[in-house]
Image (cartoon, rainbow, N blue to C red; front, top):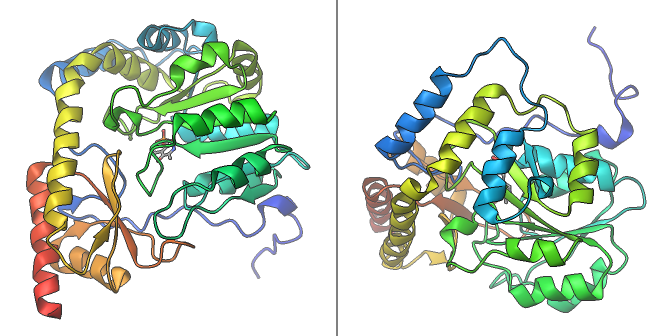
Length: 360
Ligand SMILES: *Cc1c(COP(=O)(O)O)cnc(C)c1O
């Protein structure tokens, strides 16, 4: 007889299931918004040297101070304004753990990153959803500001995953001026957006503003698990006090230091992804049954008839993996396509074109 845990599990956690991105090994994987480009040799070598010279017998620096200094330098802030985590995901969880709980609401704007609502629920934080416009995914700004007035925290994602659009700075300004909530701006993809899209420079003047970044996307280090938050030192202190002390291991710290120091070498890669996004978008425009939304990130959201079936056929007949969102509220028949290398993008377009010919 198997053990019945239903009465033993913490009530807020009942019903959660292991995260399964439905990953199948494919020749072309455009499903997880990873950076699929090869790392420039200089970056690769800097990382290799850092890994080789890192001893494994000692515990990590629990505060990741060297890495915080490198990140602080990147953004022109003090170390005391930077917090590092085991991916942006850990920081999201810790934010809700620290500032959530019963009676402290999180406001989200779905369709957005599903982990916000999942982690908040785990932390017993009520979630108030201000749905985006069903057609163009624009924010309902007045409703968002209104909902955030008595909320503990509001999260906006810029560019948003999976819709690809930036949040107007004026919206963030209103959230700061007209509410008393902590305002989290998730900038996981901001390196792919035009210069000036980030609000990280606002943190110094706006102590309720928190900006989340990650090394998983532009920095091509999704496997490393390293993200960070730039926020007021009081927020960083609180998060530092409640975090899992060794969640960012020595290899992650050393690799991240090397990668962030070598960031100039990564610029051409990010530029190429942005150029490829425009080229991919143009080519997708020739597929008449496909609708796409403009994106400032390293992925494009599309709507295509029978999306789940298309995804399956891309996988099984063309060895191309994309992300199916058609199960998600507001995203019927939507697929999210990561912008890959030129070859990968061409393979995807050719596969979609041949599937469309068959339909005709
Ligand atoms: C990828 C992503 C993150 C952070 O990812 P990590 O790999 O945990 O650093 C945060 N927010 C959004 C919207 C993302 O897509």
